[in-house]
Image (cartoon, rainbow, N blue to C red; front, side):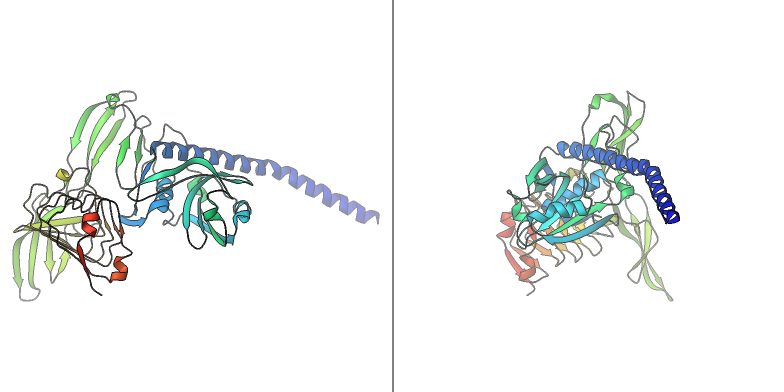
Amino acid sequence: MKKRARRLVLVLLTISLLLALSAPAFAASKASREKAEERVLEAINSYVDSLNGKFKSPYLHNGIAYAWQCCAFVNSVWKNIFGVDYYDDACTVQNSDGESSDLYGFLQECNARAGDILWCHNGSTTHYMIILAYDESGVWISDGGGDDWGTVLHNNEKVSYYGSYSRYFGGDCSFRLFQVKDIVYEAVTGDPDRIYSSSGQEEEHPHRRYVDYSDGSRVYLDDESDFVDRTVKQPGCITEGYTTSICRICGNTVRDNIQPPRGHMYYRAKLLTSSTAGESAIYTCRLCGDSYREVNGRKVGGTFSQETFAWALEDGVLTVYGSSAIPDYPDPQLSPWAGETVTKIFISDGITAIGRNNFQGEAATEVYIAEGVSFIGENAFADCGSLQTVYLPESIRYISREAFLNCPSLQGIVYAGSSSAWSKVHFGSGNEEFLSTEVRCST
């Protein structure tokens, strides 16, 4: 009996010793988590404040429109804070079902933290939001809604589980929580003097503060007078243009005023005939001299094979092709074909999206867009006064605000999909004239 009692005392002493040794580690882990949450919270609040109540919808992932409205907002926050969105393999997802009274328990069970994305669906309405904190009565959130330039609905404000947001939380509801992986979460500095680029990499320069938006645009927040010795590099066919300047405070070089690549402008420079290979042609870029050979419809050599786009203009017919989205241009006069005489526009296979201002003001009478394009950007074909017919692929999903504004000659739209599929295409505001035009669907 005494031996058994001594053994019990030894076991209890051992357990006490182990708990004592592990307590500092647990405390350090908790402190580390709280510190990381503080940094994330500070970074999110700083970013949402900088939006001034507006954000860009839809959200582009790899040049393709993937998310709209509230979903565009939460992905934009993640991309600017963590450098990833929930389409990347950098997050975990947990699911549950219940009612308003069950949400608090779900968040506790998932160990929810500031910056997580909460998705709620009650059978008729769906909403995404960024969680900043929560307790027994509600959650502090930042969220947004609306098309094109959406509106920030809440900026670090509390909503009750049983208040106006019960339309999302209440009834027979489904909950889903998206969390970035710890290694991504803990990399956020939260330092307001450090602004992250859309790639998630911290810029070397602490004085040049800016915000990157999901549409690729960048807005600077500081005083231009702090930067001197400006040098302009014009965009190349596959390289960006930009301006470099030197900060008078620290002497570092800063790059800004980013302009998209202008794309190759190829023309058929030579036609070749071989008894073994058959007919082939050599195409050369008028802008940079890059060449590739086309053999039996297959392109060989040159830089065209990279993730880029190219264009050709012959007898007024503008053809854009490649393996990427056509980038946004902040001004239509910066597009590669600005000033050219264009009567028809062909967007060929391989192009995934048409960017902002791409063809604004062109004199084309017809536009043909091949299968694969899902997104048409803001003002892409605005002010095309001679445009009569537009051919759209079944793959189109989103046509942005004022994409076809002021096209008074438009007579018809030919859509490759069914009338049912056409009804699901999302249109931003300012396309009323376009939508009033006769649409011919395949079925």
